[in-house]
Amino acid sequence: MVTIRLHNGKTRSKEVFTPIDPENVRVYVCGPTVYDRAHLGNARPVVVFDTLYRLLRHVYGGKVTYVRNFTDVDDKINATALARQQAGAAGSLEALIAERTEETIGWYHADMDALGALRPDFEPRATAYVPAMVAMIEGLIAKGHAYAADGHVLFDVRSYPDYGHLSGRSVDDMIAGARVEVAPYKRDPMDFVLWKPSDENLPGWDSPWGRGRPGWHIECSAMSLELLGPSFDIHGGGIDLQFPHHENEVAQSCCAHPEAGFARVWMHNEMLQVEGKKMSKSLGNFFTVRDLLDQGVPGEVIRLVFLGTHYGKPMDWTAEKAAGAASKLDDFVRLIGQFADLRKARELAPNEAIIAALSDDLNTHSALVALEALANTACYNDLARNLDFLGILSFDQLEARLGSRQDTLNLLIPYAARLAALREAAMVAKDFAPVDAMKAALLAAGVEVRMSKAGVELLPGPGFDAARLEGLL
RNA sequence: GGCGGGUUGGCGGAGAGGUUACGCAGCGGAUUGCAAAUCCGUGAAGACCGGUUCGAUUCCGGUACCCGCCUCCA
Image (tube, rainbow, N blue to C red; front, top):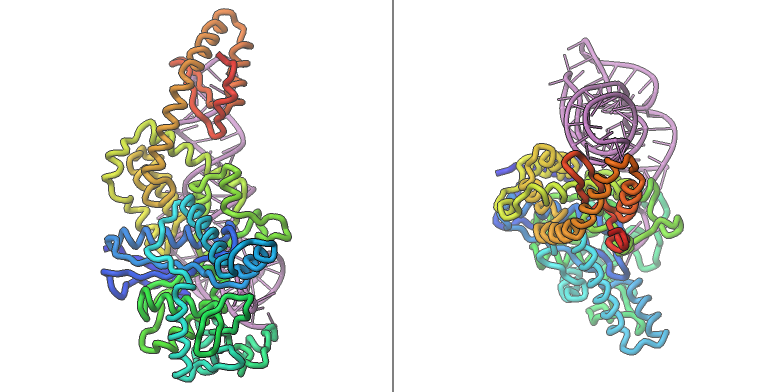
């Protein structure tokens, strides 16, 4: 079996990955808070951990359980719903919240599908696991790790000596940083909320501490416990979640089940930047995945750009990279269209060099180098197989692409004939102006024009637009 | 202030203590009516200062700069 090595954030070193149960490799990744469209940064962990999921499924024969949650309890969602209600929208607040989260989950699925990300095995919603959260909170209180105060329940960080280990911080240092909100009901400034009270304008559930709602961190502890058990293999998410979210998850879960150890391996993806700067609304470089898709940057281009940078390094999204990836994909599709047999390609195993690259802490960049090598060594069936394996272009997408490409080639046949005739006439007359005029028009329509002794060949280029062929015959 | 990540050729971006990364762009050539595409060839590097070593871009220490987190943003 292939040896997978992963950088474990818990130990800060690259380790050989050994699953707890090779018959059921278990992965939990923190998913989105469903208050709005996913921005481009949200897509990075999706692509990173989808790639991990594909690798694990390959190596462990599909015996993988991948969980990615939807956080549908959140004050931004509440605020949106309340604003809609105040603007005259019909329905109860709960109904408006549900509407908002349903809508957002639908968007999320559509956008992440476009990036070639497989759906996880489970996509639990926090609102469906409130009883499990309440039970875990009660357990933490019973063990002396949490306390109720003023309708809130707080986790007592001083009761867990390892608090801060995952993120490499100490409670005392953080307090010294003095950027902590000190609420009167907290015993220690670093104590964090497990449960908080809700007024009538907020969604709430009955609990031993009154009507309220869960704090952010407890949902992941409760849902991973329910779906994967008290200990599992890999926990992933963005590096920005390392503190406080993941630190608090560890504290909750390890105190609730001290014998289990919670997640064995922690993986964090680094942040995304745009043209060298942090993506932010104030800089005007903030955009969603949908924005890019609508601008004509296809999901496979986004995915290819993402895979070019190791997940542990900051990634810079630039228009130049996107253009480069689009042109590379065009080349791949053209080569596959000319030389590959997709029926045979489907039978192939993923390329060993690609598997080896991914097995080395998900070295996607090296995997792409290996992919490129397949194109350069005329292994076009393998190229198609591995584009599918890496989630860049599935076989179905390739077939659709090749189909429409063939349609375009057929459409271009009469234009090629016309250009060839003009050219032959020009050779005799020594006047190439009519040829050059038609060539320029074809180029303007996004057609690639190739003329040689063998004849004239017309191919659809990246920006092909059939409408601009009008009147050229 | 605390914690973490980064700094490689024109650009992007890896691996490896000593032997070509690779891609894009560039340059030279073949080819072409001119191009495009393709093919052949080719220059160019590792922030800075020390240390370890026969030898470091690769290991160790320090400096500078950039980025992120510490505020329920992936």
